[in-house]
Length: 417
Image (cartoon, rainbow, N blue to C red; front, side, top):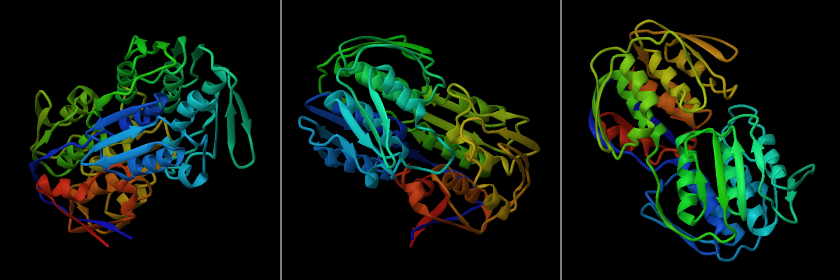
């Protein structure tokens, strides 16, 4: 079992190029199945969730090639409408393939999706989307069957701005003839990117970036070439590491337009930054100032994906911080490990109070999900001594090579077996 090792307490001075976005490419790969042709993607991250998606695409009958961050999907022929548990349990985003299969084949059967164990994450929102477009949902003991004689344009209001449900609704609406209205949508940058991709394929979408989308779909969509945006969470992780220990770093190919919430937050804590097109210079000269209260919320609010990562940085902040998690109820599983490193954190339900201290101490800890692993890496950068993070596989789901990136930023990190 691989481990991430970090020798911390060294200010960061260096630069790194930010990889393609995990949360963008996964829905794009599903949407690629809407066309009976070839889609080519560039700047694709070489991470485990992408390889899991490729396994699903191959199983369904698509032809896939992936090399040097370039991925080609030929979905001319699909031979299966079911996704076995073997593939579904690998990641949560596998549920996104249900929408494109429903459009292409009129039915889809799948088990409940897997991924990180960070809460209940019900699939109900997705099934309500399928029903709104004229599908019948049958809940079996071991699987979910969704079928339709004909998908029809609709007006749907989401009960919650779920990113995944929004993406499934967009994929269905874009792949059928007619106009659909989707209300209460998620406005995360990855949703915007899916809209742009679907428009490249031939659909037309009004009010992109707003809470109500009007989608003019087509039965026949075109294959396209598309460059994936950079990963804002990866960028935020490295900024958090710099916040934790200080230094001056440069992020190349950074998704700066999507990073305003985290940049403004860090600036309020004492950081300085300058942005030039897609290059970000970031400086932290002192201990970060504590945050009196921070609450996760759908975009443009504070991202739940960044919550645990920022908490790890706040463990060394000057003062007392409070964080409340409102999206996923189990996003704080890393707190016992931060305490093991010396952090003073009190948790009550989905809220944590962090009393910042001068110094964390490296030790052996374990990642419990993707973002908790990133949080422990940030803590390790700011800790004195060696931090060894078990279950590196979680980190490889979303980071191409976090050890290599930390080294490029001036840190000391490596992967050990």
